[in-house]
Each structure stands twice: as structure tokens, then as C-alpha cells.
Length: 285
Image (cartoon, rainbow, N blue to C red):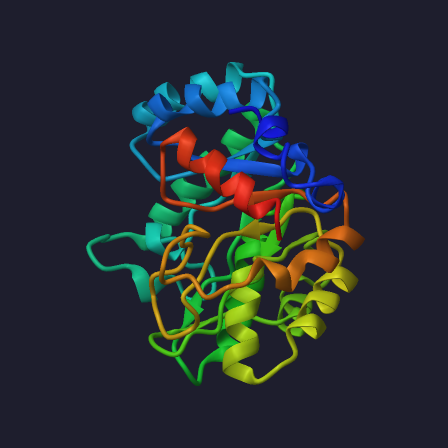
């Protein structure tokens, strides 16, 4: 369903909050067969961009899989691998299980990431600082700065990560932490709205203060999805998932004030009909 038709009964005020070109949908580099459905949504104006998640893979597979994305003329945004792909910049060994040479793995993963950005014309590369063992924050910050020195690129934007109530700590959960991580190197930031909400719940910080802090840093992109809150590892829920507790109304005025900010909808779904249902729900925030 075209975006305009999906919103026909929602009123002019909604159209002032989120316009079609601001939404995006995700795709994995390891699943190029999904991309045609994303390209269709781009071509008919239902979304404005695709976030391509780089998954480390054998070089021959990478060269094959990047081709349909490289030849497409629409807007693609690159997301670098993170700790779930065993690329954890702030403490590489923390997620090295099963990989004999974790630094070689990260080297290859970042090489593919930068090449993917080159070949798709992406203006940004979203990166995570990663997770670290509690009590080792200063070492983690130094390690992340070393990562930026080893793999420099002016397209990096740093994503806000959630403060959850279990497991290793995430690095870069507040605007203040992100500023320290990016000083002198990072030229833009990526607020993940439910991640920031989780942090506000755990730390007792006003959510609006975190949003304003991200705006002060300089935002180049953003992530949006549902969330059950900081008690669960299962993040990035659909908006209409019964476990979602993140209210889209929390960001309505913020998005109105920042009309040029792109929003990638981060959901683990391939069905374009499901994506468009989320676009419709999101437009009502």
C-alpha cells in the first residue's frame, strides 16, 4: 500500500510529524534476495532509504552479495557489524568465542564495511562502541579510540546503545558518554530512540533531557522500533507487539522539531506488508 494511502485517514497533523521519505527499512548483506522488496518500497515512495547491515562473511560471498546493492541507485545507509557479529570495538575479546583470531575477524569485517559504503555510495556508517565488563569502562573507552585510529573513516556516526539490567555493560548509553567516545573523530551521532528510553528508565534520567543531549551532539540518522524496556534482551519489537512498552508519543514533538532526521525502522522482518503496517503506526506517533 502506498504511504499516502495508508495515511489518508490520519489527518494533516500526522503528515507534519513524519513524512514518507524519513522512514527506512533494513536489509542484511547476507540476504540479497530480500532487497528487491525493499527497492520496490523505495521506488514507489513508501520509504526513503534502506539500512544495509554488513554481516562478516567469506570474501567470495561478500563480492557476490554486494552486487545488487552496488548497482541500485536509491539511497542506502550502511550499518557496521557489532557484538552480535563478534565485532566489539571497546573490548574485542569479550565476544571472541569460536574465533581463533578475533582481530583478524574484525579487520576483515571492517574492510568489508568500508568497501560496502564505497560501493553503495553511503554517506554514513553506523557504528556501535560495544559492550564491556563492568568495572573496565576506562579501558573500554581507550580501546574504542584505538579502534577508530586503526580503521579511520569520516563517514562514521556513533549510535546510542541501551543501558540494560543484565550482562556486560553497553558503552555509549548517554549523550555525555557518546561525546567522550567521539571527540575529535566522530562527526555525527545516531539516536536510537528506544535505546535511550531504556537508559532513562535504568538511570532515572528524564527522557527529554537525553533527546535534547543527542540533538546538541549533532544527529545524522536515527533508529526507531518498539521495546519491552530494559529488563529484556529482546529489543527491536514491532510497534504492535503486545510486549512493546515504548510509546511513540514520547518522540512526537522531538521529531516535529527535527524534520530532516531520517528514521530507520529496525525490525527483524522481511515482509514488506508488515513494514508498511509499522510505517502507518509510526506516522501516528
